[in-house]
Length: 190
Image 1 (cartoon, rainbow, N blue to C red):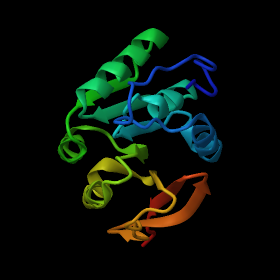
Image 2 (tube, helix red, strand yellow):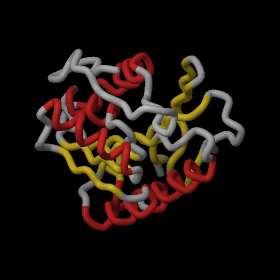
Image 3 (tube, one colour):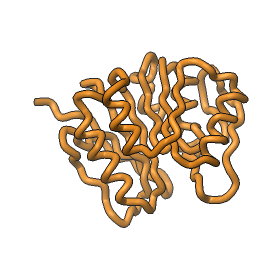
Image 4 (tube, rainbow, N blue to C red):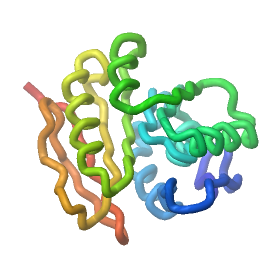
């Protein structure tokens, strides 16, 4: 696993052993950031269920002004911190070790609006998708910039399909690649 482009291009990232953390593939990250290219420079990026931090690190490498990493698993947090240290990333980041639902509530009270939010819970945890997307929708006015894009990575053939709409968030694009899929959401125009 490596950083695809930007300041930290071609630098190697580590991942914990075993299947508890499933890093986003290099190929899918490259596709994601090709799509997000017009939006990444200067972005405030939230990497929810951050795992190794590969997605948020890629965002920072490509010019995001600030990345907030949210992860609750101790092993993943240790790996994330090791990756940040190895790359020398010390500014423009915030690492928060807590559950995503608690973090979303806290971030809505204290952080400026995010322009990009990426979430990648364990694929088999359908409730995590629903809860996270509903909380983002409920907190949209306080947490998301009006032009914000929320991206959910999920299994291509998920047992419980993601909804097209969560409050003011509506899916405007679905990209499938291998076993993975990305659902892109924006706030509805009134």
